[in-house]
Length: 307
Image (cartoon, rainbow, N blue to C red; front, side, top):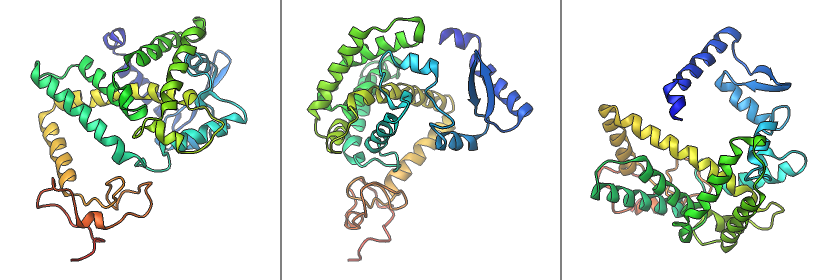
């Protein structure tokens, strides 16, 4: 990462993509590299096209990705081919609530997120007052483990260390031999935690989904993997805002305005009527009795019963 920053690779990459888009127009641009065919997406509309037409004719399961992910998630739906892919994909979509912008367990999971954020801010305030990456990253993965695996996994750093070790080998894909001992240890540890299905976690939600031919321990490593760049993106967003004080003030003001003035109509996930949720028809009584922390400017819900 340090070398990439010194060489300004990201900026150069953006310029190259812009040059390709100017030269060839909207894609996907078909490329052949080392005897393999790739589709380079140059237009936002093609993102939906590629996703909708996966796994045929587009597939993420190309050779390099398969060899990289085999180091720690060999049965992930992302690199599965053939008839098994549909079942594994369906399991992931159902567990993660892909068809709803708000997960069914939002109201259960959010308290853990807020609690970890508060602990982090208290720790930062007690020390230097400056939020550093190492502190943020530790707090981030404490939150991740609580959300996915349950509160008892909050301090289980070994699980993350195992996956980081396997991922570092996966970075070299087929140039490094598989460490099957560590991989089996990681999956056995993860399966043991998932089998506990601690209440209030995604592990419990998956168990309540009913029987499935898909083993959760084969799919969850991709989630833990994906939380890593999500944390990096959150950190980058905060760094960007902190460099522009007016924008930071604007973001804070927008956040608090939405928090305090939006009507919250669904008792299960506390989402307003304008946002589709997975909880079914909301009960308006929750709007008639909004949380006490709202101020007097709060908006009233048009569906709330009049008293």
